[in-house]
Structure formats: C-alpha cells, structure tokens
Image 1 (cartoon, helix red, strand yellow):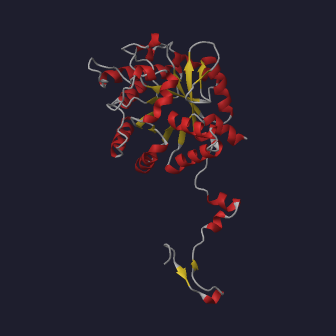
Image 2 (image 1 turned 180 degrees about the horizontal axis):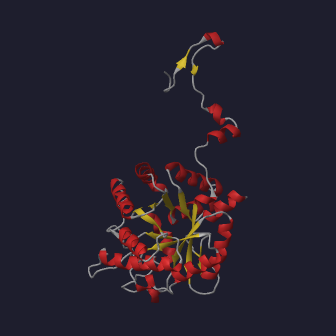
Image 3 (image 1 turned 180 degrees about the vertical axis):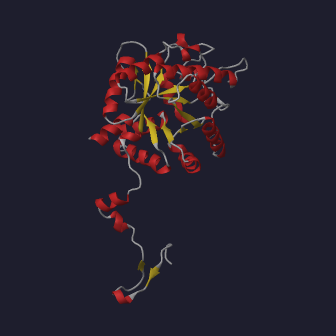
Length: 345
C-alpha cells in the first residue's frame, strides 16, 4: 500500500516495480471522457436574477459597492426582464428601494396595493407573463430603523406583530401577480401564517421560497448600500432574529419548521461561506434547495477581477459549480444575466 493505493509487482506484463492499480487521470485526459463523467452542469435555467427597483422615470443608478449592478425604474426593469428571459433565466426577484416617506413604524407601505413592489410585479407579469417573479417578504425597506420587522419601545423586533404585517405584504404581492413569495425576515411561524392566508384567498398556486437558513452575516454590506439601509441601521445587528454563523443544527431546525408550515422551497443565505448548510439541508430534506450568492460575495469577485487578480468568468463559473456540487438546485446571484450571456455565447 503506497499513498492509500494498492500497488503490485507484476513482472508478467513486463513491468518492474510498483505501479498504481487505478489511474483516475485516464478519464481526465481528453475532453470527451471528462464530459462523460461530469457530475454537475451549469445552465441558465438554474439562475435567479435580482433587481433593485426605484421610483421615477430617470436613468439606471449605479450601486457604487456593486460594480455592474444598478437601481432601475419600473420601465427599465421591464426591459431588463425581457432580455434576461430571452437568455433562459427562469425567474427574477425584486427588491424595492423605497423613499423615506414610505418608511413608517407600522411598515404599512409594505402592503400598499399601489406600492413600488406591487406595481413592478404587475408591470413585469404584463410584459413577460412566462417569466417567474419572486418577491422579498420582509419589512426592512419600509421601516425607519432598517430592521426586518416592527420594533418595540426597547428596540426589540417583535415577532407576532411583525408576522401580521408580513401576511398582508405577501398577500399584496400575490394579488399583484407574484409567482413566488420569499419570506426573508426569519420571524417564527411566518411561513405557516402566509400559507394559510394565501390558500384562504385563493392563491393556491403561489409558491413560498422561504429563507429558512438566513444568517446574521457580515457579507450583506453592499446590499444595504443598494437599498439605502446602511445609514438607517447605523451599525445595528440582526442577531436577535437571524441565525448565528456558528450554528448548523439550528438551521436544520428552522428548515424543518418552515417545510412543515408549507414552504415549497428553501433558501440558504449567504452562499459560499455556508455550503455545509446547503449540503446538510439537501441530504436531510431532499427538497428544492437554493442559495443566495450575496452582495458581499459578488463585490469581492468583482473587485478582485477588476484589479486583475482573478479571471472573472472562470471564477464565477467555478463558484456556480461549487453551489451545484453542494446540492443547490439553483442560485440567486447578481451574476445571473452575465452567466446566461456567457452560456449563450
């Protein structure tokens, strides 16, 4: 035994001395054999493209901390949605960038039928009805403090009262035409309440992609810049409702609860630093499993690529393969359009 391999000293084949009984490199020698044994593939059908949506009729607004990403008006969103659908991306997700005037303590703007998110949903579904539209169900775009729920006098994010608003928000999205609602708030019991409300209102086909394992991560900084929440949060953290990055078993408990309450799909967020969670979830629950390749991950790849330290296309595709290998059925990534373009080219 040498290096874990069985060796032999077989002189009848004219070979003197030990040689490996197995040569895995034979299958790696040529393109055809590498193709025949490839375990995972990347396709545009596995991608979810996010968009930050703003009011008005003006030009797209660059996000400084996310090169290549822009805040877009509803009109621009429709144009981009058409293009990404033509490239084979099956679904987009919308993140509204709300004016300060829409931010109130009760977060009532979240379920305004004429709100920015609701109008954006309707516009895309009218223009590209076959494109899946997912929404973010959380209150941070509508709260003056930047947290994902309602806050009591002591600064604590209250659970049950927040869920009441989340239910109204999810219903307003479904009524506007959303195909998928994505509760990303991490409140206890919200999936069950949303599912019951959707069913009772006749939205039996509206899917729930629950952010079941959303961690209180330091990788969200550029996203908060994009939605204008950096200043409102003012350095506050979300550890009282998002998961501790140290915990894995807790994530499995959260996922199990969401599935029992009626979630159709689950999301792990962030992505690359939590591939162990993706793997555990896929093996344990065997349900459609997704990861969010978050803003900080995107910004790091962009910065290194622009500095000439990495080859952008190669590292992005390798990153997507890592998600697939870990067990992801799809990936929400700011690179979705680019990846789809590369695959089409």
